[in-house]
Amino acid sequence: MEQPRTYRLLSLVASLGLVAVLLLAVFVVAGSAVADQQNSPASRSSSDPVDPDPLVTANGGFTMYMPIIFVTRPFTFFDPFDDPNSGWPIHGLNLGDPDPPGPWTAGYGKEKINDTTTTNQNVYNVKTVYAWNSWIYTAPVVLADPANFVIQVDGKSAQAFMWASSWGLYFNANADRTQMYTMQIFQDSDGTSAPTLEVRRWDYFQGDADDANLRLIHHRCPSCASEDFKWTQIRVERIGGTLLIYAGGTLRHAIYAPDYVDSAHTGVGIYQGNFEWNDLNPKRYSEPAFQMDNFTVGPVYRR
Image (cartoon, rainbow, N blue to C red; front, side, top):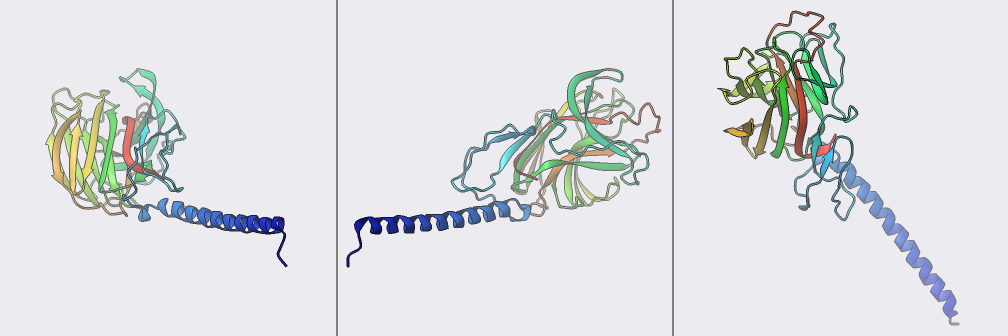
């Protein structure tokens, strides 16, 4: 007997609905798996379709250009250090911290423009206390493509008696931050000596300035800021095995540095080296040694 038309129609609708539900479930599970995989630095790839790179700020305001499926996309990260919750290390000075790297401090504070005056501008303050120690401050993002990226920051010395110490960037770091590159400005403040620009490849960094490393650049930089409390902008561009090194808006060096460009070396952040003895004067050791502002890096994934 032929089934009534209404019954056949209801059966067809029910069948189509069941198929739609099953397809949706498969899509959600697959999309979740892809997103989880792309959130893992070891599995990320730079072969995603080309879309306009969004600019994501540290306080969360952003425009995201999403592909058709739900996956994590690379973006450019900009941090003006106006949000203490953006993910940078915050640590109070504790003289009992082990050496190396020794007592250190990091966090948000007012910009120092001389020994006695500050402004209302928030910047990122960093410091290690003991001599010949280094410290790194990890950014809340990782490189999306460790062989192609741009990283930039404004920085300055904030203590006139920390003459031979350095501030800068680290990049292409492994997970435990023992292997990396650094770019450093040694800020001389005697009024006559020019700052020094250095690039190093660290092979086993543990916080001591004498840890195993290879110095790739060591040059005077007369046109870099040669006074404390004066901002300098530094920038690193990696194009495959080549590093382009900028300071003060000028290209200073192009060097061949092909190591640490695999997916295991995606860490970036700020570097500080203390090569002058601090006398632990309570009026001075709580003050920042260096200050940073306007950190930019891309393309990256959020940590």
